[in-house]
View 1 (cartoon, one colour):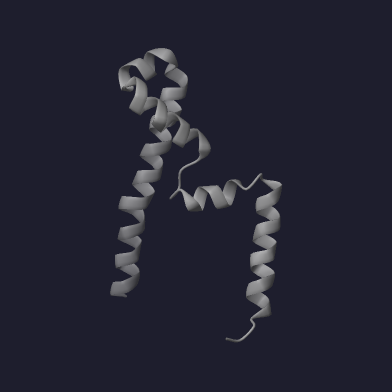
View 2 (spheres, one colour):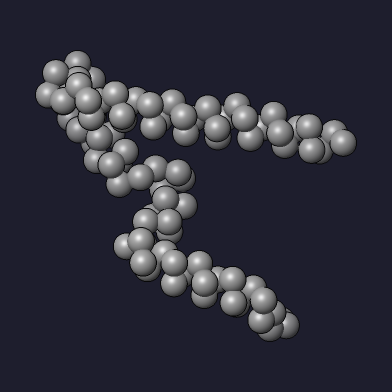
Length: 89
């Protein structure tokens, strides 16, 4: 396989930037668009239930809900619409 220096430069730049952000970008991609906060809140929601989670911290619950709402809207509605428009021409 050929060595592509431009790809290597881009990957190294991405990894360098990712290390400055405490590997947050690679974590985000590995976990399908979830942040560490979202994963922690998901575990709490499974253990406590949504009602108890809301009563424990309404502000955190609202952030959790909005993050999921925005992420799912982008992943499952907006991206497929643009992909179909792009593929149809």
